[in-house]
Image (tube, rainbow, N blue to C red; front, side, top):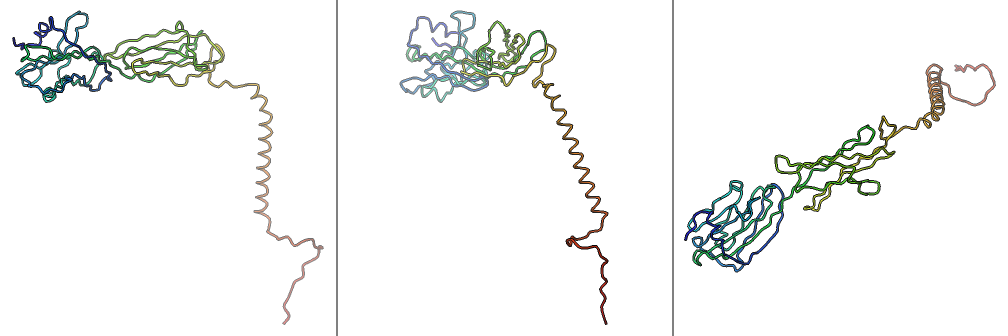
Length: 306
């Protein structure tokens, strides 16, 4: 029996039992990852004696598998059984000769988050399964830094938090920055949706009663990455019902400062006039040096006697 089609793999698996190696790895969206499947005894292999399959379970169909990529005895290259992995999944022929049947997966997407099964058979051993490895691939993507807008000027204060392009689905919290306590979940309404890239976008709306001082933050938690992103400063001071200001002005203190400012202004003007008068006098009056106190008498004219 020589299986030339990956579909015949389902027949080969019937009644076969072997010890399964299991591994769990994580990859970021858009990165490349290596799913390890290595024969433990370090043997060398003839490619004409091998049948190698990497497959995944079909979502929603129990006990149904889809082949990601495969290598059949006598082929010069590996094939692909799933268009989603075409040009993204490959096996190394040189590596397989050394017992390394690992799967090289390029440009990881959220749809790659699942269990991958590596199966290796030897033709010379009547298609005995010599290796089975299950690799669980967890996929992650960083959320953008959450941005909080608001509050609105209504009967209650409304804040809106947005964060995009993350994976997996996040936890969303609103916190009181004064003491870092969590606000009641009943005060928030969060919407998490998948975008065209298969990543999650988050919009969370917080509604709270009016208080003299507001200092809240929005936190996006990515459990897989052990990551918590918290929005920047959102502290605000609330004035009357119809207005919100960050720095309210004390009208009483401003009124008390008015007389002091008026006196200072008059003094500045007086000093400026005195300086100007002195300068004009120096310009118009002849310069004389001070010779001490003297009696008033006519100056004597000195003449030279011949």
